[in-house]
Image (cartoon, rainbow, N blue to C red; front, side, top):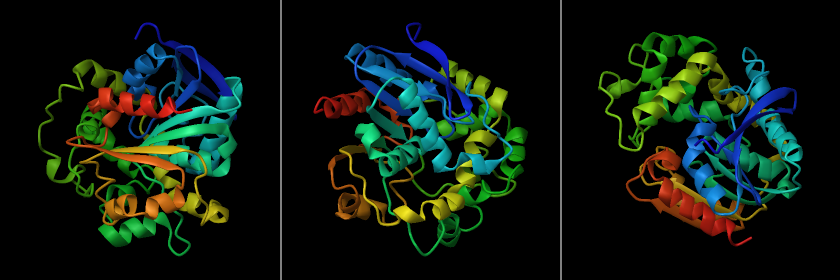
Length: 319
């Protein structure tokens, strides 16, 4: 890890912390929630050793990236975050880059390819598939109708509410509960029992998540709080309004999609059928391959890094 360079780059009105390593074609690595550039530590080392320049930012509102107005969720729409990425790509001196996204990073990567496809050579997205915009109902309405008010996306909507819950639990426990979550069923945050049935279950760290990694995340989220990351969820409905022009648009870059067999996103009703039954390919016509990693859950960049690294490398080698 000592060989990773850290720098601050001014992009789109914020100061973005970037971790990078290696020489060669740029691979932009976009993390999710509640994560950081650090979630790509295994991929950075691997890609740098295999002829690529791995670049992993702390996204707007996360880690050592500063300048985003945390108290204004509307500054976290996909337009802002994709704007950050376009400015970062320009600042790196590149016309086009490879992109790898996970969780919210995958959503951002899909939108980058939707809005400005000529910035992306090829995309490997993890965990979150591309779904076309529903013209009839906003995202949070969909989740509320399907799962009720206790679903985590619904509980994340009220500014300050879930932050107070997380503060009462302590940052370290929140980090541990999220990163070790392996239940493919819907994620509920009932009031009084923030992690549902698992709330009182002691956390046993898996071999792939040593204490020092938990400590790194804990330290950074203690500095920033969780609001920056939660603001992305608070923009779901605003994104729905802003993205109306792309309602039936398709992704026009080459794509490989990788998901853990136990990923809760993969288990949303209808998703497996959509991904494997032709719906996904309809909207992502240059979809090269769908890979399901058996026995793995949501945080596959850290749980099964060797497999993820190989899948990324094998795909990028085609270009």
